[in-house]
Length: 533
Image (cartoon, rainbow, N blue to C red):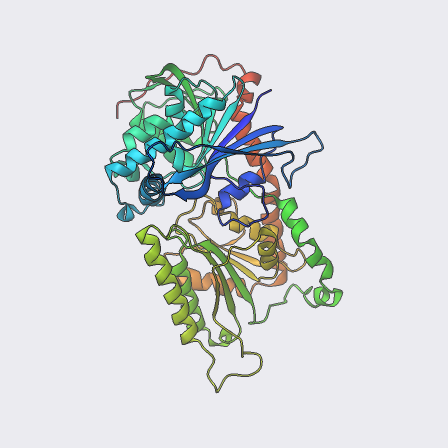
């Protein structure tokens, strides 16, 4: 029986402890095969002096994966995790993954710190997991690799003789060619990526960037390009290439060193959320909502009071636009004094990667900004009364909060503010909408630079690089009538239900298991001549 083997940097183990990383949580909620193996790092760092340490993998089995429908049969999941040595953690994780690839793929080349030792460590860890895959692989198994930590795993798998189908999904943005050209190792990394069978991005723009980058670095390897719909393709000129990149299910036929004819499917698979599960988590809140409260807000002209709550949930990362959010919020309170002593911003901010200097500095700057704003707008003895005794402009919390508690906080908040400067998708935006009260929904304030913006145009779209855009958007969200809030919510919810977490999984796995190839004879791809430009 075919097994699905999933590889991600972090693994969400079967316990009740909350976890800050969205990727591992999303994977836990979506693995619905009858037999799944999940491989990754267990989060532990061991200071090993013995050169014989060999990254032994511990094995934990669970008969049923919580939170999924098992009516079709029992699901089993096997967790295979390893600790990293201090050197592996510093070179692979802190070094090349998060000092090089993360800033590169978030368009911050100014923050890249590249060393030969870190790249060597990155490749060694990619090879480590390829060796583990070789130990457990069976002929019918398929492998699903996740995120920027493992760009080279398929290449090392092929070198070890693994011929199984391997898919790769990038959860963060796939940036355009000029950014890749700024990195010394891009040529080798893209050639490693070419050994996957399916390469997935979050957005159609990401896919277009991916195809353009592949075309640039793999010019001497591309034999043909075709669409899985078998439409004729002409890429003799860039304008024709652009139309190709806008089509769906693009396939590259490559001549690789390890395989003379290799097919690589490149497509966009926007990740969703488990809407039904989120709605179940907050259903008791809607039931408790009094009839009087609902009736009081039924008028389409109803405007909420100034005493509203904004919620923002982010890792402390320079891609999330926290400092720009705080600056805009400060400006809004200055320009709209009637909201002072009433409006609250609840900022959930989880520190991460504090071993990386850029994150240490940002963590300090975030806490300083919050303190400064709270000091600036502290109620004076002349304005203080019982209603403002405990008021703070920003309520700041670094706790890792359980998913159910967070959904409750979303339900209770009038505005969800996503301020990303660059984001692959941003599931917080989708979760906020899924958790809303249909009778009295909140408003999503969403950065145009989050991948979610392409699917969520009914949100209030803002530009975090434009202070006025943020303050104007906040004003619109705070004063939006109930009828408009309900209309926007229904439009956004329909999109979430259509492109939910299960649809994302099914779409990717259909391509990974090669379902379309089995259903459609594409044994004769449309051959095209590639231009030399």
